[in-house]
Amino acid sequence: MTVIEESVPTAVRAAAPADTDTAVEHAPGPLRPRRIGGVTRTGVLSLCGAAASGLCVTVLLFGQLAPFSGALGFTVTAYLAFLAIYAVLTGLDEDGQAVRDRVMTVVLWTAATLLFSGLFMVVGFTAWRGREALPHANFFTQDMQASGPLDPLTHGGIAHAMLGTLTMITIALAITVPLGLACAVYLNQIPGRFSRFVRTIVEAMTALPSIVAGLMVYATWILGLGMQKSGLAAGFAISVMMLPIVIRASDVVLRLVPGNLTEAAEALGAPRWRTVWHVVLPTARSGLATAVILGTARGIGETSPVLLTAGFTTALNANATSGPMVSLPLAVFNFVKSPEPAYIARGFGAAAVLMALVLVLFVIARVIGGRGPGHQTKRQARRTARASRQDVRRFEDLHAPGLSLFETPGEPHPAGDTPSAPATGETD
Picture 1 (spheres, one colour):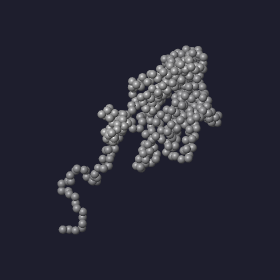
Picture 2: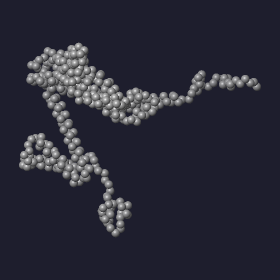
Picture 3: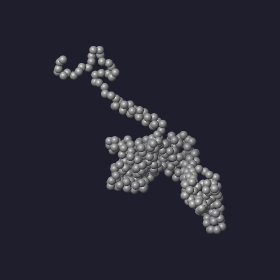
Picture 4: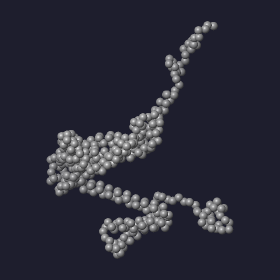
């Protein structure tokens, strides 16, 4: 028996004619699962060979065969040649589905590398340019009221901008979070013509220019009502920019809540508001926290609405309803447009502080939001177990046997006292 015959199943050999080996030769062998992940020697060699070949082909094209030039064109051509050669090398050992899988894996890893490289460059460059201002304690505790462009970094700071940013974003969150979540719940729980209209308006507002939001608040709050520029007006303008982001992201998250959870709650007799409050919102809590962070990241970096509605000042102002107030993005813009090196260093230091503030807010939101549905922390698991034990005890108390009204359970009757028979009106 040949090697091919040994790998053929017994049923196939029995069904094959005895006088010919054609069916045995063309019978399929045992199926082997395709390896999806992991690093293999063949894969590494194919990757390195494709990279070297793509680089050589690009050098040949740009140097000898074609009148190409430019670093960007060289990079793009080398990458495309690398992908093509890698697909050919992978196709020598794998089928078409495996080739597509390997090529798309390389493309996704390239995109992820470029993304994280860009993020690292932005954060690293900002922190490196602001390294001269960040070590000074006065940079976080003083304002710029008594400091000028020629003063050294040991004088003045961004305390007024930090307080202004925190004040404005707090006002904006106090307005945006309840309104945004309520609107998202309405769009998710009450479908209809009006909800479709509201969803269309929300999607259109996501592309609203920030200067338009600032002009609207400036025209209504300051010019129309006669109020002065303040942090409260800037909070209103920032909330206009944050609201559509929070509504749209929350609506998407609420759609992911399984419908059988709400159906089960309503089947048990829970009203719609209790189902939303105790089932829908806790299930989507992690995603809702992410939606709030997305809106916060959009609003905390706005500059033009703050300039129109809050004005500009170099002094520390803790009153959100009176007097001008400045934010960190506006302070960064004012610092970096100056030709003085000290002001430029303060600007990059303020930008680094702004990124750190966004990171802190993100961490707080993730802690509040918790983990995704079905994943509990140790504290949540202990709380759930404690609540389950309380429910078990409560159910046992409800199903305990009934007790007499005038006697204690387990207490014997007094001597000589026996339960009397009901009176029938007859005597023996």
